[in-house]
Length: 518
Image (cartoon, rainbow, N blue to C red):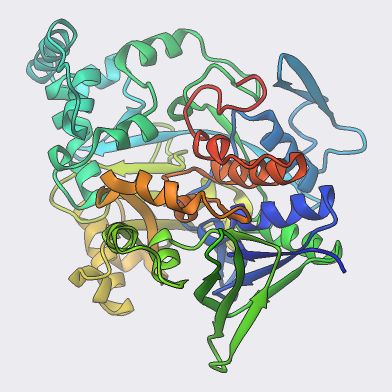
């Protein structure tokens, strides 16, 4: 009888784990997915032919292993160049047009190479992101504010805060107080729902990742076109891969291949309990089907969990130690609402009169609740059914206990239309259709009981056959590629009979990702 791996969740980490198991071992994965779709937070919602990317997913990684993995699933478009070089472990791998690349006009299973453009909306004007000290930026800021920014940054250089304890201090040390107040404070506090001074500096270390004014200036003069972009901090990526029909297309194709290779994906199953033995093994999970209410016990030899750590700990049977349960109960998350607006006309224009080229626009305006916009036309032309219309996603960050989360779809749509009008971007009368999508537990946060999280890691690591992978599975603010790497590394450990989980928890430290060259 083949060995069985029970995989909880069909997001990037869970599907990657299943695919890797099937390709590299004789272990058969059974994926239990709570929803009716594939991709988790990287799903694509198809609304009348208009597609929404939940949160936005640029397919870029400093890990050549991940880049090659993606291109193995969806080949690169043929219109880019005869070949693209990807550096890996001191070597280069070439993706030739012949035999692999696809014409995006005639093929659907194709990766596009897209240019990155993101800007900040502040004082009802668009500013480059990352911040550049260009003539345009200085003109928009005005002489007095520019002087204050310069003096504030010099002060931060000369007198840095020595013991960074919170996110406010983290930003001030890298940008100066004035630039922090101008371009970072409002948006960040919308995302996390707390003052920056109450958020751990670890958030900045994980998400801003070494970015500073000096690196921004250096980047201006050292821009590269190599797809690998290995010495570019993540926040400065200039181009990226993107599936023709959004990130969900990648994971739907992976799911299809998992089933074709002999794996199984079961939809509508929510794991409620995880059974364990006293000697450090997981024996089974018990899941309930959403439609029938049926309870079923799934026995396995290995278990991969991408479910929220909070729920995993609560479902342990016998129960986890009280101290571990207390930490699990105290883990917190931010939730996410996207409002898609199909617009006949928008006011956001380039100087040429064309629609702005931005993928994302960060809203640094304290008088509105929206935190960020996506313009889906600019991710891929195939994301919008009618190219004469503009398909915009407004992103709101909240907690499930907030009044915003409880608003009806109609109320959220009216709020989104009103805020677009207030921002002088779109008149409400120009919105012809809309949809609201809610995603709970989108962002695991680094406050609440997170300071004691290593105690959970220590306790979980005693189970030889349990692997926590992915963003919520590890309560770690992973990007998509980091989540995939956790799954790949877990399978590496099984293949190599490595008991330690240290290499899993060490992933997602910028620059080298701890992979090979790492």
